[in-house]
Length: 127
Picture 1 (cartoon, rainbow, N blue to C red):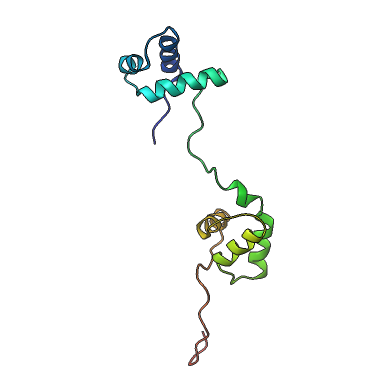
Picture 2: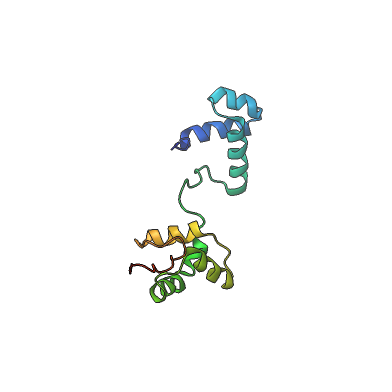
């Protein structure tokens, strides 16, 4: 994974841009992309901060985490419920999601889960 540019480089790039040099010229001078220079300048004008934005991490699980208690109750009550059925229940509660999101939620808690409907009972031998 790439690392953000140093604060020192950010300060020097910003100083050149604010002195009136063109974005592409500054980018060539410091060996960075013109989009970095432009985004850095915009970010500084809006927030007065040169610090890089946080990188990585899970940004989408907040919605499903709000329903954690309900999901765990469902898993405890009906152990053979499929991921698709859990998704339908979440949809009825107002959260549109997909089975992979539910699986990641359960995996974070160390729970394994059946991903397809149960098979009919065998007629020749109990399973």
